[in-house]
Image 1 (cartoon, rainbow over the protein chains, first blue to last red):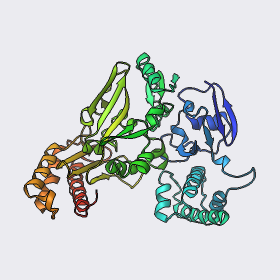
Image 2: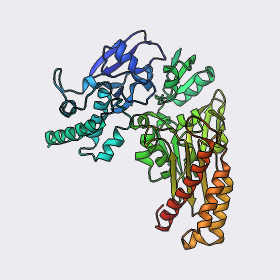
Image 3: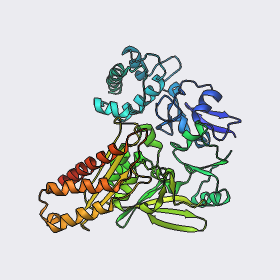
Image 4: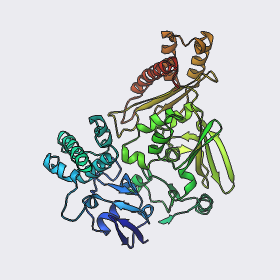
Length: 159
Length: 290
């Protein structure tokens, strides 16, 4: 089947999509957006976190057809312009929150989702919000530091 | 594989009648896992996310009519005060990403004994409404679960809504898992103290082939509260009542050993959770909450 959706602000189309295919597969293999990572394929790891109509979801659990006509934002769409970085991305680099990098795209989207709803989250709120994103390098301390740094930057920019 | 995408409830029922083998999908948190892992190749998927009725809830008399497609995230943010037990259980489901997609209707459709919404639905005395082109029927949640991952749906039926009495008193939920998030229950328990009707509701999860009530424990506690006049006095609970309730809840379970825990551990945990949730609920009742 054919899937048409708004992806990172642009209308995108994919043909010959298998009906049992996930949105993650469509994004990575048919639309050339490999930022969302394919790790567990069962909603456990959060590496494929994207926005679907403004809600953070695991793209591996969205059937391709369910995304028809919807709006999707992937990690590639977080930065305001090509070559630019979103403050969340910059904070992850500066805090050393990227080790192997595989969990990073999902954590960036999950962090973005947290900070747009809660400007200055407590540590407990950060842990709760990122509970569905696993880092197998176990670099969680740096990730928490990155989220705090991003929160500060985001608030400064907004004020 | 066919992908059926009805835009109305009538179309959804017609599609299910015409294609009974079609697998309903809402949040995809169970169905997509099975497809991704090649554990299931349904001839058709019936996408219910375009049916507006399913995504709504409304207040009807003393009950909340919860559309089967309302997400856990919305139960938490929109119904926390009216359905505290279900909201508490919803907070323990998966992660934010899962709670944004997963639905109470989906939990019922999957009918896993470990599903987090079952104990609060049982404790609250909820009814499940199912429909087909033949008509609508309603049944107590306790009658909906028929076996491990089996439910009372006929092949042409879909779950339309869950009818949940508004809490008239404290509800508490407890769940044992290996960590605080992304966890399937090793065992879970929900209690509901209803001072208006002077009744007690319970629900046990992940400790029997189906979610189930602990009926003897409900009668035991309600009778103990009545006999000692505790509904009126709100005095402290005698230790024997708390302990006795735990023993009765434990006795209602028939758990198995599996990868998540042993039967013995589940029994032990249930007695602990029963005593704890009763204490929390009674504390709230004494404080005049709920």
